[in-house]
Image (cartoon, rainbow, N blue to C red):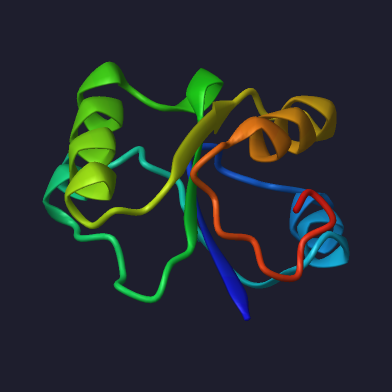
Length: 103
């Protein structure tokens, strides 16, 4: 089972369905708009963190990067478009996407 944490954007539209199609069975979305988000931990069962850069502040991005590195969770960055997300996940070298077509 592959799990993905998406941080950024208020609405994802059809993105979760497309992510399911490439092997992500569990997708957790956090908008990242609230200031308290920097205190939130990354769930331990997450396989990959995806940050949508056009909908998130720099402070939260820095905190997420640090937490992901501490937990040895791959992190990738993309704009909120399917093309950008697909490319970012495919290029995420540290990702352990067992059921994903990228591997």
